[in-house]
Length: 566
Image (cartoon, rainbow, N blue to C red; front, top):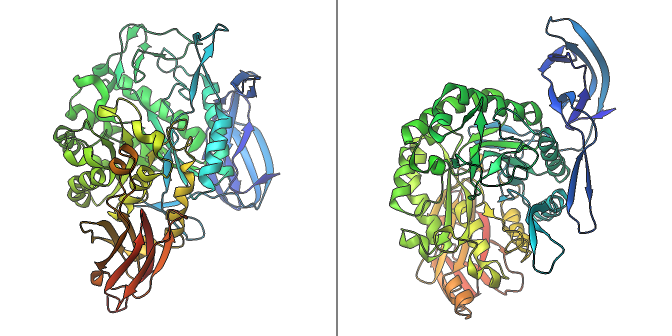
C-alpha cells in the first residue's frame, strides 16, 4: 500500500518504454529510467561508503497526489501491454507539490510559500589519512548523507524551507569522462537527499552544473570512470566520441546541446514528480563559463534554447540561472546583457568582499546587498520578475576563502545582515547564505537566527499584501520597512554594531535611545520579535507617527497592522 504525496518506485520489465497510470478515468503517462540500488554504510570514522547491491533496474517513478485505487499499464516499443499492476494509495501528512505561478508558490492548503533558504550545496570532504602522522592520501571521503540529515533537520527546525544542492559537485555528479555516460549510483545518492528533504518538509533548488572550463589534459586521477576534475574544482576533462570537449564546442554545437537535454531528461524522470523539487537551476555563475572564450551572445542563445525545453520537462518547478557576485561595474554589465527574462526569478549573488570594485561591497553586507539590488531593480521590474539573492555571505578578498572574521561571529551579525536584508528591499524571500558548515553556519550553530525571520513572515500572503519597501534609515540605524495592504514588517539594525567594530576591533556598538520618523508606514499596531534573545530592546509607537527606540543594541524585527486610511 502506498501513500499520497510519497514517491513510488516500481520495478518494470526491461522492455517497457512507457506506462499509463489510471485513477477514476484520469491518466498520467510516465517513462522508465535505469535505477541503481545502493547500500549506504559508515565505517568507524563515520566516513560514508556507497555500494551497488544489485544490477541496474528499469524503474517507473510516480508520486500520487490523490488517494484511491490506481491501475498501471506498461507498454513495449510495439505499443503492446506487457505488464500491469493495481495498487492502493492512502492519505498521508507528507508535503505536497507546490502550486507555482509567475515565480510565486502556494501550498495545497492555499498557504503562501515564501522561500527561506540556504546553500547546502555539497557535504564537507576530508582527505583520508595515510596512517602516518600528518600525511594524507589522494582519496577524498565524506560524512555524506548523515551530514545532510543533520543539517536539514537543524535548518527545518528553525524555519528554513529551501535548500540548494549542486548536482554538478564531485559528491553528486553522475557524469563519467565520456559525455552521455552516467554513474547511476550518483542519482541514487541524490534520491536519498530528496527523501530527507521530504521527511523534514523542505524544498530543493537543484543546480545542474558548476562547470567553468573544459581542460584538455586530465590533471587528477580517474576514479571509477567519473568526470576528472582539473586543478581548479570548477574545471573538468571530458571526451565525446573520441574527441576532447572544448568550451566553445560544448555550448554551440547541436550534438552537445542534445546531450545536455538528455542529461536534463535523466533528472526529469527522477525528480519532476517529487514534491521536494522547487527549482531547476541550470548553472552556478554561468558568466564564468569558458574563461573568456565564450561570449554573451553564445550564452544567451544556449539559455534561450534550454529554458524553453526545461519548462516542458519541469512544468511544476521554477526554471532559473545564476551569475556571479555583483561586485564591480564589469560584472554589472554582464548582468545587464544576459537574458534573465528567460527565467522565473532575477537571481543575483552578493558577498561582503574587501577586494571588490564597488566600495559598498567592501563596507558591510547590508550596503553590498543594497548596491546590488539597486542596480538590478529596474531591469527586474522591466522583466516583471522578482529579485532573489541566491548566494550571500562574506569572503576574504576576491573570494579567496571564507571570511577571516567568521571565527569570531558567534552572534551571527553577518548572518543576520545577509539573510534578513534582501526581503526588506523587496526581494522574494530571505538571502540564501553560503553554509560553510565547518567554519560558519554549522560551526557557530547559527541556524537559530532563521527562526525570528520565519516567525515574522508566518501566515502572511505576500501576493495579497503587495508589500512596498521603504528605507527610513538614519545615521544611527538601518530601518527597512515593507508596507503592505493591511500589515507592515520592519527590520532595524544598529549601524555601529557592525563587523568592523565588533569582530575586527573587539568593541561593542553604542546602545541607542532615539526616534525614527514612522508616519509613512501608517502603523496602527506594533509587535516586536527579538533576533537576539538576550537583548532588552524596547520599541514603541508614539502617536502612530514616531518609533521610539530604547536600549537598542544590535537590532530587532517589527510587525503590525496599518491604518485603513494608510
